[in-house]
Length: 300
Ligand SMILES: [Zn+2]
Image (cartoon, rainbow, N blue to C red; front, side, top):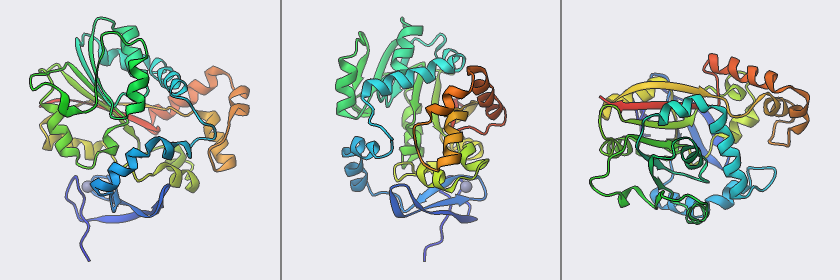
């Protein structure tokens, strides 16, 4: 038997957090009691990973109670950028050259185009169907690439954004090192949105069905502030800040508490005022107990 150790801090105090994840009964979630990192065991091989992403959108469809078009997804995503507008405006402020890694349906591209039209933007998106959608989408002036390796050797950016990307990357150290080379100077930032370990459905309400639903083969790691600080120090960064955001609201949470599965929760949305929903989110944010966290890094 091999001794498990933490892939971030190297510590040997590892416990089993959960046996089986949403899409694989034989994958376990392990937790490091040193830095708090959670990681999958085993992780997909490179071949498995390749196959997994080939079928990615088919796989994702089984997670929603209704099928969404790419356009619906973009509209939903843009809503979230507008909802936390202060955080995203602060991020793109005075940033001339912006790179987004993993543009998905283009919600952030739309936000940048609307709020910083003079910025020059490069988008990397590896899904061909997403890329086709983005290229048709009135994104004049944005350069679309398939892969980081297509960036010119001399390309440097003021802001590199990777939202919902880092948790999918097996070798976080090499990703951070590679991206660091593309940051222009000391004012440049790398911003990454990742799932927060302290999701209230897990951390506060302890809904086992949600816990099973939220851990997937594609999310290799669930990071904590401490584990990100260690990774940053190892790869030539310091943490500029953490931002906490809550994507799913009280309406969704009540539905999970009652139904223990994803379901249309409109009946709850209709009961509560926008102020009630917003103040619930704000209370969670104050406690850093949210479904989403953003880490902003700069070169050390
Ligand atoms: Zn650790």
